[in-house]
Image (tube, rainbow, N blue to C red; front, side):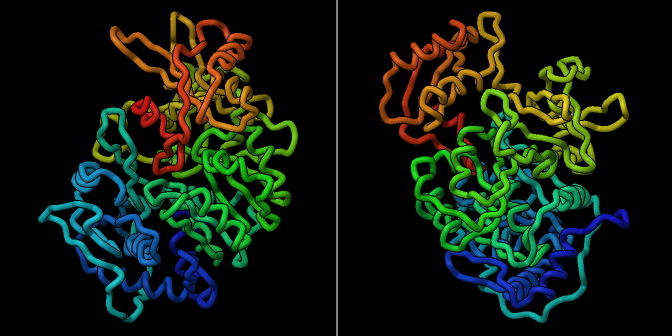
Length: 496
């Protein structure tokens, strides 16, 4: 590792001692100190240090032992894979098989996972005996994997994204340079499922500075739990998905977060008017849009959202400038850079970018390519523009840009027009549905109980060309969210 590069896990180990008496976690209203966290970490470390297993499964639970298990695996120089108890049994079995997992750590009832295999050892971390803390430090090489996240693959089979310690530290160093005014007195939110990589920065980064992490219970209604924690504990830092703010919109007039210093929006495109409306709830907060694909280690661009003149495309807030150490190009379909202000695919390069998908050389070859500068770039699949100031403007997904009757259509433009009709008080998605002979029909789905479909059609006809008008309009009381807190478009397609 380069001398000037900080090591994230080393700094967390130093924080264990430096902030021993400070609060580290508040989970289900129970407070745990850095001392209690480190003792639990070393219990698990002692257990796994002597095992040959390189890759260890951890069941996602809202418990101190779960977070301690992740830290123990990282300190032991091994790799962790999160298995979610709410995932279908087949998916968890497939992930365990793909990652060759033979040891799974859990804290409560193992039956929730439904893994009936003879080849896996299950160890309950909430029943471990006291041990003498080990001070042997970190056992790892920078190129070893810190974690593997399995995302949905286009073939229906989970796709593994391995992130090395080198990737994680490159991210940590770049993220630390974003000029956060944060220290051991800050109170920070962790609302994301542990299968989603934003959860990693949501708890690892606070631990490097001695801050306290407040987790969100999976029980009950998530967005209500989030706002209750933000208000009850006067949190100073919160990273949230825009879908969550949309659900909170009816309560904006009642929400008061005067101590919030930073509101991070992430995980999906952020709506400019929704964020503008939320400012009254958090009058002293800086709003930041952070963007990044899992393959580029959590986040790789940042945009400080101004109170006025916010850059956007069809209401989707700009994603800003690349992190330190990240190179970004906007390329056309032939791999040639587009001119300023023109739309193309975002390619990223740098030490944060993964080396390749897990045991999937063909998928890797499709997404990682060498640029004319000799650097390896990851093709994000995101359509973007770059403006004269060097800010990247997000324009939607390549797969959300479709061709219909010979016309190229950006689905986000239709969604923007419909949301305007509802004064941005509800979500709207346009789903392309393919039938016989690959014929495509557009389905508009609005998050409302009742609709006047005729009036919506009139509104769209007055603002969009005929070929962009959806043939079908549906209403849905609540949009389903996936485990990353993003609107689940695949599930909506199934429901309609």
